[in-house]
Amino acid sequence: MPLICLLAAGAQAGVLDAARQGGSLRVGVDYVPPPYKGGMKFRTPESPDTVLADDLAAQLKLKSDYQKNAPGGALQALKNARPDLALTLAPEGDAPAADTAVIATGYSAGGMAIMRSDTAIRKWDDLKGRSVCVSQGSPYVGTLAARYGAVEKVMRAPADSLLAVRIGECDAAVHDDTMMKELLKLPEWKKFSAQLPPTERRNLVLKVRGADAADLAAIRQAASRWNESYWAGVKKKWVNNVAFEVYLDQNVPDCH
Image (cartoon, rainbow, N blue to C red; front, side, top):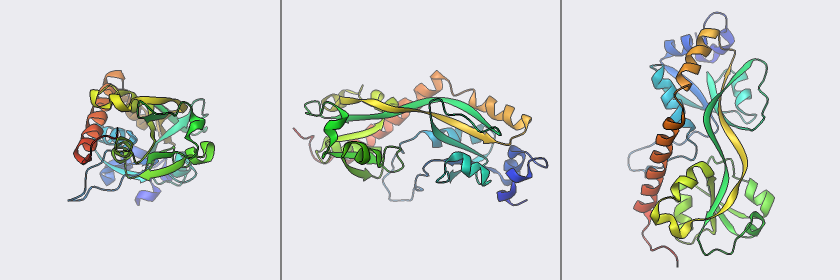
């Protein structure tokens, strides 16, 4: 059976049955990081959704296959029968569709700006005319220019955005507060610990459309391990990786 027909075949084969036949679990994500190639600088992506996709697939003894969520969102992607399930950021209070199960992942985040500790920026409106770095695939791309008149610089990944703040190429960087609060605990980030409070908190959720009861039970069981302890490990690894990526690329001193 062609992969594109899997969800449409509901009664004949469940999502996981079909995924096992193909050997991979197609997971929709809002941004698919470019594949790593030899010679490239490794970069940790903004969202931890691919970490969850890999973990979920591994628990089900499958390989993960990232699929970009449709412009209309994760639900539209599922209706198009492209991914088997989708991970996406959803606003708090977001109502699920009648035929879609929504599973909490335990992760939520809002956009938080971090800056040099001696910055004159005190509120979001102060970003008008200021250079603000964001990373590719970030949900904050476009919003800072539209709302505050900021001059956005879209960088490849969080490490590039944060490095730009450290060397003075950007006045601020905006990323998920969940990760930024952990990063700012590191002593080398003390000089860059000024921040603006997070806005537009969203929950990272797993959406499954039209799955049978057995599929849904298996997926819920796999997702049940995404508890506080699990997330503590994910955040620590993300922060350590990004901080190290910044360290390796910082060839000039921090701006004074």
